[in-house]
Length: 187
Length: 51
Image (cartoon, rainbow over all chains, first blue to last red; front, side, top):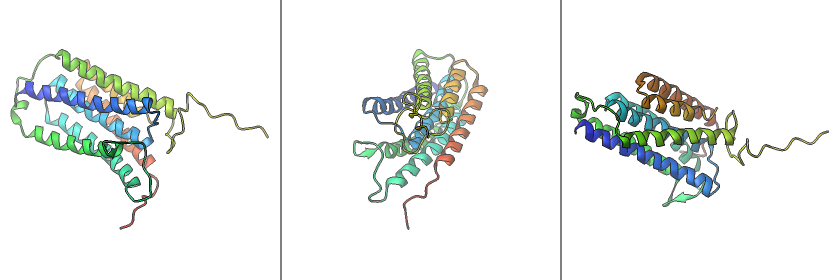
C-alpha cells in the first residue's frame, strides 16, 4: 500500500468518525435526547481516535499514529461495554432509542472494535511507512481535519451547556446552563 | 470537567493542522488520561449481573 493510498483511507476514516458524531448530534438536537455521561465519554473516545488518523493525514502514516487509534478505541469501547452491561440484563431498560435494532452504545462498541481491527489490518502494509512521506496537506485532508476539529469543539461546548463545569448527572434532565434549577424556597 | 477531552482534542487537531506533532500528541495523551479518569468517576454503580 502506497503512502498516498494510506492517507486517502485515513481521510475516509476521519470523515466516517465525523459522520458518527454528526448522527449523535442530530439525535441530541432533532430528537431532544440528552447524551448521558457514558454517551459523552464514547463520543470523546471517537474524537481521540480521530486524532491518530489526523496525524497520519498531516505527517504521513506511522505505527505510533495507529497506536493512538487503538488506545483511544480501547478506552471508548470500555465506556460502551460498561453501558451495554448496565442494560443487558432483562428488565433493566435502555438509554435512548434504537437505531437499526441496536442502541447507540452497542453500535459504539461495534465501531470501536472495527477501528481496532482496521488499524491492525493497516499495520500489515509496511510500504506505507517507507520514505518519502507524502508532503503537504491535500484540500480534502484539510477539510477532514477542520470538520473533526469543529465537531470536537462543538461537543465540548454542548457538554459545558449540559453539565456545567463539573461531572454530568447520571440521568441528565436538561441543559444546566440553559435551564438553571430554580432557587430553593426560603425557610 | 466532562468537556476536557473534547477541548483537548480540538486543540490537538489545531496543532496537527499547524504542523506541531509533539504538541498534538501531548494534548491527545492528556485528553485520553482525562477520559479514563472521567470514566472511573462515572463507573460507580454495581452492574445488575450475576454469573
